[in-house]
Image (cartoon, rainbow, N blue to C red; front, top):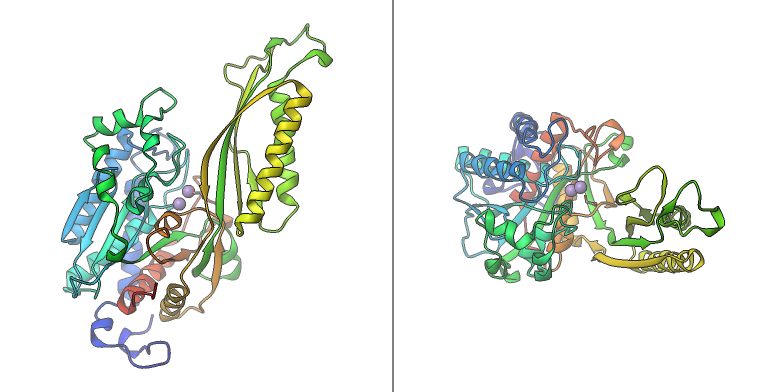
Length: 440
Ligand code: GLV
Ligand code: MN
Ligand code: MN
């Protein structure tokens, strides 16, 4: 990156001294990138299962990760560091105008099972590294910068995706407190056992007038930037998602003695549905559907599956396209069950609308990318992000960072380079330096 002072603001004028003080030069950005990679590696030492990176909500590894993030924030020089009622890690770095609404940023620090070390975590660690740089030089952004490590986004333990950001957005579903994990632990009991206060969650909802914007830095989790040879991209919009858990009940029976025509095989019924999901979702561009969990509870080699449970995840850039596909899939499930004599129970676990990024924040991210010397490009997000929830209370924007290894994510092979993390740190600092609260 060229020295900040030489940069013009979108071709309309020189960067002010206050803005320049918040930019990073190439060496500072690169150092911040290296720090982020080292921190991500250290954070990945906490895992529910040795040999893989799995961090579910409020496990011992999750508590360790939370403590480590709070420690990083304190060391970076945040003015205030706390854990909120749902387990979010929150750091505040005061701005020059304390009465101005905050610029809130962050992402999640829980993971999928056997996931990667950057999904979510990059969006927490990178702003911490930039604040460390600001604190070291006494630079203050105009708006208070609030960095949130969201405690739960992936829904691994309780099928409660966006649990943590929904608390900030004021749309926490209190019914979830009664939900139990695979071992029968109630969420409410678990939270209390870790010193969290479910009754205080409602009080943690942000006043929308005190949030100027929510922005999230995240790995792309796909190959687009990699294929285009670019480190960074501004996000145009985030696909909406719906999820359903499907529980089929047939009749368990002897695998050797029950004639094929006399079976009520819940596993075979599920198999028909899986293939229908694939066919239906392949029929339209940008529509995607996945059966990511599929189990025959208590199954045995020599027993016809009496039960089969599976998850459905359907996404598209337009909610109407996604909803039409899900309707067709549910109709197919009903038809298959009817034909095979299978009972079916559906649990709708997620319905998040597509979230467009605010046009002014998109423009500000494009300008911030340009400030690093890269051509500004935009791309949509196929993955879900905390920003989707925060969109309920604030204008949102996102910065994507290139993934290596073919763009793979939700996989231990997920990777980014220190150089790209550095470019992202430079762009983030440029964004903060020139941030203007968008009109709402
Ligand atoms: C979040 O990781 C998602 O499933 O998109
Ligand atoms: Mn993820
Ligand atoms: Mn993520």
